[in-house]
Image (cartoon, rainbow, N blue to C red; front, top):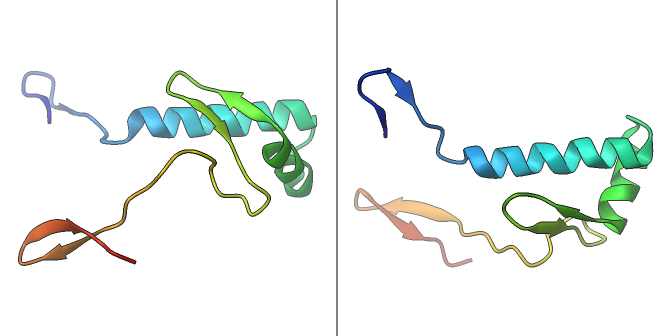
Length: 83
């Protein structure tokens, strides 16, 4: 998954990482602080717009409305983990 001519390999979750960085940077800006308690308070009370989706967090810190899937390897194949 990359460009054979440039040797560049694309990161698989680059867009999600960018969106996460935007959320964190905006939370720091809104909190006007780098203190973790101040940032957590902002993260739990705001909705953040990113190029991918709007992101918000519940009181436990879990992302609201954005599911995730856990996979495990069985027989050499990735299969969804049923937990």
